[in-house]
Image 1 (cartoon, rainbow, N blue to C red):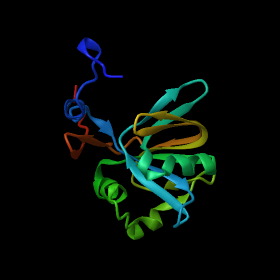
Image 2: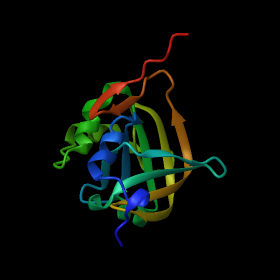
Image 3: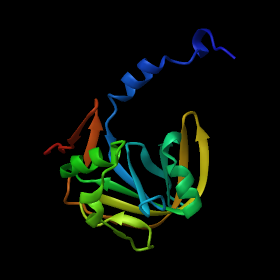
Image 4: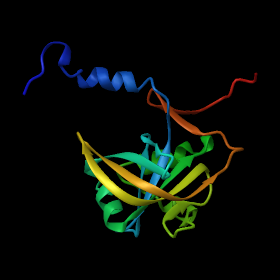
Length: 171
C-alpha cells in the first residue's frame, strides 16, 4: 500500500537528517554468545522503558544478529560510555569488530552477564523479556536486574555523526 497526502511516510534521507540533530547517549550492548563468547555493538538507541518494573529497551539492526543472541542467552547489558571512550564506540561500531584491546575491559557483571568494568557512566544488566520487530530493527526489551552508575564521568553523546560530551550549564 502506498501512502499519499499527509499520511505519506517521510523520505529516508529527511528522516535521518532530522535524527542526526538529536543528541543520543552512546552505549555498548554486550550479550553472552557468538564466536568469541561475547558479542557487542555500539548503540545510540538504548533507553528506559518502565520504572515499575524497572525495564530498558534497545533498538538493534536486524543484520547484526544481536537480538537473536540476546533472546537465546536470556541476558544482555547496556553499558553507557563515558566521554573519553569514543574509541571504544568506534571499535564496537566497526564491521571488523577487532576488539582484542578491549577484551580486558569486559568482565562478568553482578548477574554474570558480560559488562564493561571501566569507561562507563552507567551499566544495566538485563534479563531479556521480549523482542519486537520494528522496520529494519528489533526492539529488545529487558528487565533490569542490576544497575550501577558512575556520576563523576561525563557521558559520551552522538550528534551529527560525531561523538562529543555534555557540558552542564554552570548555573
